[in-house]
Structure formats: structure tokens, C-alpha cells
Image 1 (cartoon, one colour):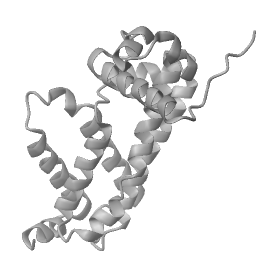
Image 2 (cartoon, rainbow, N blue to C red):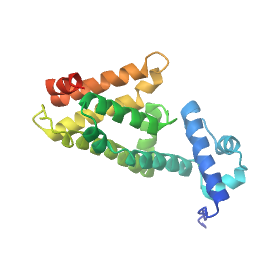
Image 3 (cartoon, rainbow, N blue to C red):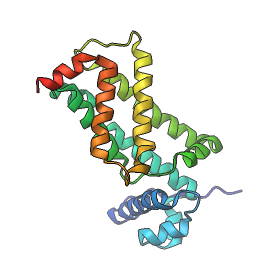
Length: 210
């Protein structure tokens, strides 16, 4: 069977078309879930012909991979080390990091259960999600290592794993309750919880001093 050749956009118009497809998929996945979205719906949302969509993507799975890759790229642009070093207040620094993470997620509001099904059902998607999770874990490790405060937990790796779990819940579960809770207030509380877990009263003293 002949493998379908996918075009790599060269001209600005082609790049813009591909970008519109990715953004359309991102929005539709967030509002309807991946399962119920078709390539026709994505093409209509992007304002391109369905046939044009297949010039850039083989199928919906290919589009899903592109959306996940985009989120990974956005995460890489968050310099948590610089944020912590520039803020005298550790709690405020963690809060800034959480806000930037949430902003980078944009409209990626795919239900957690559906994400698990994707991860379990496709090795390529699982590899992307694993890479995404690895970035969050690395960010947690950098959050710990970039502050001069003394770490309260005895094991830094276990501490990083705990922070990873908190951030994961913050990014992928709490947004579904955003109509019921004040995300700004909960972001502060999550930052406070992380800071107190990692550094104890030292974190509070930096907050009081700024």
C-alpha cells in the first residue's frame, strides 16, 4: 500500500493554513472532546476545504499529535528558574509559574479520562504525553533546585514527584470546575501549598518580607 505523502508548508499562506487547522482542532477538542470531533468539523472551523486539511495531516490522529507537540513547545518557553530567581517571594514566584503553565495550556481542555484512553490506545500519542509529563517533572525539579531555601523533604526526587502530581491536577482537573471556583484564588492556594510543602516556614517568611 502506498504511503500518503504529507506536505511541509513553505509559503506563508500554507503555514497559516496549517496553523489554523491546529488552532481549530485545539478549540474543538476542548469544547467537544477528541472522540466527537471529525476532520470535517476541524476543516470547517479552520476555514479550509477538507481536502486541503489532508494535504498537511494524514488523519485526526496526526492532528492530535500536532496539538500535543504544540503544547510541549509552549511549555519549553517557560523559564521557571528565572522566575524564581527574579522574585524575592517564593510563593509569588510559584504562583507566576502556575499562571504561565495554565496560560500555555490555552484551550486544551480535553477531559482527563479521554486523555487516558488516548494514552493507552496509541503508542505514538503515549510517547507525546510521556514527553509532556517529563517536562512538568523537570520543571518541578528546577523549581526545587533554583531556590536558595533549604528543602524540607529529605528526598528531592520524591519532592519533585509530589509537586508534579499537584501541578498535573491543577492543569488537567481543576479547569473543569472553573465555573464554580475562583481560579485566581485557587492558584494562590496551590502555590502556597507547594511552597509550604517544599520549604516550610521559610516560604512564609519570604512572603512576609515582600
